[in-house]
Image (cartoon, rainbow, N blue to C red; front, top):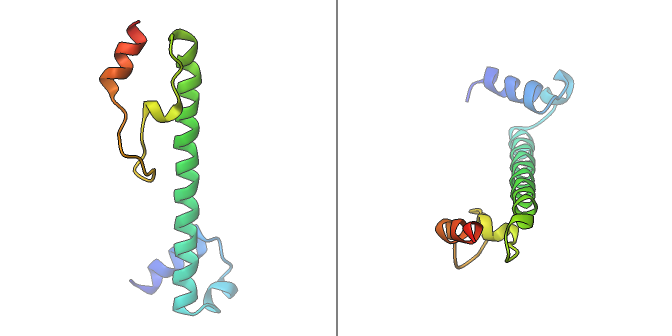
Length: 95
């Protein structure tokens, strides 16, 4: 990693001032970047879960048996034995 790349990440993604960036050790900078990426990942997870929930409440008025958001999709970060069965959901919608 070059110094220019470190400056791009620190000043751009982390929005640090030059004074704060130059005062960090490499370990502190690495931890700050790791925390930044975790925050982005958590935000994306929340957006996907919100989308799945919205899809479920949109579909539910049109089906006999209520479905839960987890019936529609299982995300990699969720621990579940059985993945959602897309054909089964389509059959349920056709009823």
